[in-house]
Length: 192
Image (cartoon, rainbow, N blue to C red; front, side, top):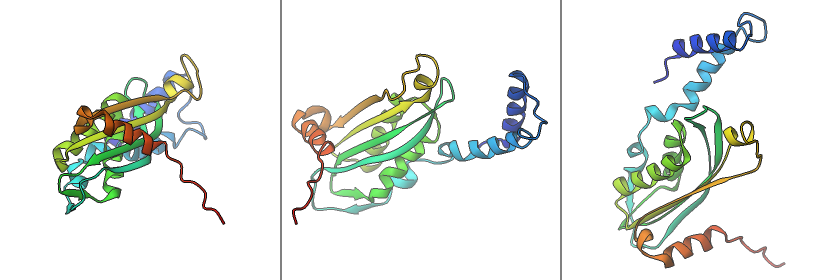
């Protein structure tokens, strides 16, 4: 739970620290706005993946399920700057599937915390393995990090990709190849 009063005080101190006047017109309400913003951006601390992944449905088909292009926004724990991108999740059910929106909610749970991409990718995979008990999981996360594009090395447009495999995906290169083939598949335009 975000302590909004502490965040407000921290923002006031930050403004003073960079030489600003926290009482000037344009900044007077900034501490309050940022405290409310952090309540939203850090909502993942008040959530658990089990809240989203525990409701499953029986499925006869135990073939790959792929949910791709799940957009997320997170905050780097090293510089407290945003990183954002897309997560792609595949799993092989073991008689049970979860609602597709629940995969996106699982991503959101971990993205809405101070985070590093490598850890977030593994946390999503581990939560799915624990809650869904699938035969395997594969997660690919692609993101742009403002701590690298807007400061420091300043390389806009550069992206970081992390990949995590669990269960049968770790053991079966054929499944990994299928995942990447499906991930890169572009639907062909229907002929008229």
